Length: 362
Image (cartoon, rainbow, N blue to C red; front, side):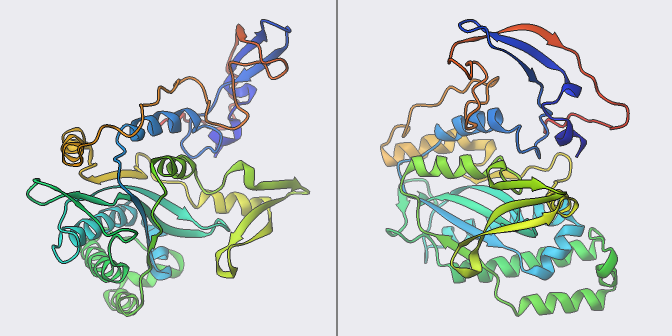
């Protein structure tokens, strides 16, 4: 929280710069580079998107969402690292198992999975977004197997397997003593109480939602660019801050995606934002199947050979020092005349002793 509070302020230091054309002078303060900060992910996002762009295949891409039911989401909040990792593993296993089944696709697929823990109203709502190419190499690697036009895998079959595998993993974690319970959930430390929760959610429907396929590689990148390096809420949704209250726009998905305005006490807004901070070192973007990090280059080469395809687009060449992907943010251009900016002098850090600060670049 202190990192976000101090971001791009004099406390972190920076430099002064001047326009070579009109003489305009401004101070540019350093970023905190905390991965939860809504202002600090532009350069990281540009680098990540450049790498993903080089991996796109000339096939339809599908968007599949796995959502945890409310009772399991409560357990996840008390055990973020354990249960979030479980969500990644089980969702990927579900997709890969059903896709490998000859009755459905009979292919090895790849996917990029992105963890979101928030809803539009900033409440805790853990779910996993998976972006999946529509097909993959056959299990013997001899040909490309494409999915049916406009259809990837049956969501009911995915939902059933996802529920079974997740509950098996959750029970195993409980019996291994890997789950902790506090407050209103403290009673779940007793095996009978935990078993009742498992029985209840086993009888409920688990939501697995397959959205319509993306229109093309450009739409895949546009989606990933919006949602991979953002936490809880974008600055653009915040409408007003006055009298200790924050107003922001949100979509009510239960009422036909109607756009509404929500106003919260500032402390409640901060509390909801902090619900979505992740454990140190936890990766909220992961790759599986033929997109897994260990063998991605070789597998993608095989896919392109089977598709007789070359890379869809020329790779991007992002500047890691500039936040060029952030709207209205071009640090090398003068905001008055568009001329070039040159650095004048460094401004020292002025970290206050009252706030502990740790620069988290994970």
